[in-house]
Image 1: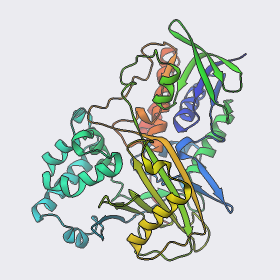
Image 2: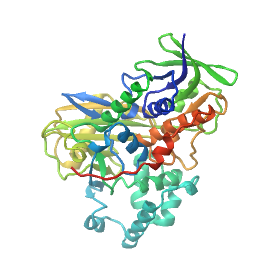
Image 3: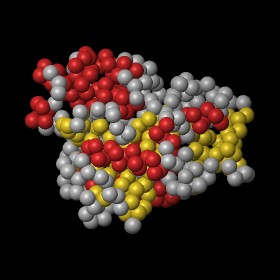
Image 4: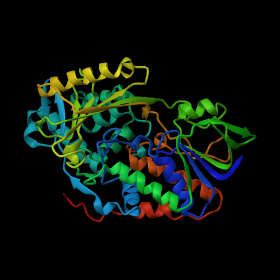
Length: 449
């Protein structure tokens, strides 16, 4: 039996960040166990014809301080370039860019509601701390600062696209934080000549290796053995066991609870996940108008959104190649669409493309990703579980289910890992400066390509 000071369950960005935080503070004997063939989790990539593509759309947010700090630490931040993108709202067969004054004037919403919408957005842009909206609904937020007309015209549709829930059931704190990040109006970042999530994952993995962290990929976890108030051993799928002084779980809560049903930590039981379908298709066809993000707000298509990845990063594929990303958020993995065959799914998204652009998509190749547990559903009463288990004294939690109310992004996932690592170090009386360094970090410039 191998012995470790810390076993990290899951090699996504939260697990990588937790291990990095511990090793940066001088801790040794750390191993990260990842079921997949590579580290990165939802930020993973695939390769095609010498180019790397994300499993689904990813972009760098200028407010995402943890992400920017890590890119700085791995010497990748100077490579980041920033670009203003076009986000379309497709409604009843027409496209609207709500950031464009003329398009906004044409949008089917009452004139006074348009003024109220601007008021809502300005208030959200200026508000960084949304803790006072915990437990309150997105409906209350939009109605109070925008009005019911704004909610019905825009936010009820977006709420359905994201969670398949009405605004009444979605957290107001989450929506406010999402608007504060300004994904549709602020410049978004990318790395020319690369897929930036691969640069991030490779750079962080190299930094971890330099700190002596062991990384085991293609390795599943079979069981967590408990004695009293401690997790003492991690049993792996192939029969090996790892003795652990401390454990960090970044597993989806459904998976964790199946292994440790006696953990009664607050909030763990009620977390449920959306599923996501992501299909990337490349084509030599010219796609107009140019856009990065299109919300299919009529709610009558198979996809919730279409992304033109090369509109943000023109170098993501080969010359003259357009990379189209169809994305569907589903209430859960039991939905019928999630279980269609590849051919049926491609036909469904082909129908969407034809309806939106007026001609048939002729892809050079396609790649389908099915994520059965993609994002926690941030309902009105959502709360993060504690960073340390209430039942087991040496067990800590990190992952996208601990990012509330912020955007569940690459950066916030890493922030949850840093928080778990810092909590463990505090409990052990070991000083760490990483969280303070992240909090103090500021983006110096936003160079354009």
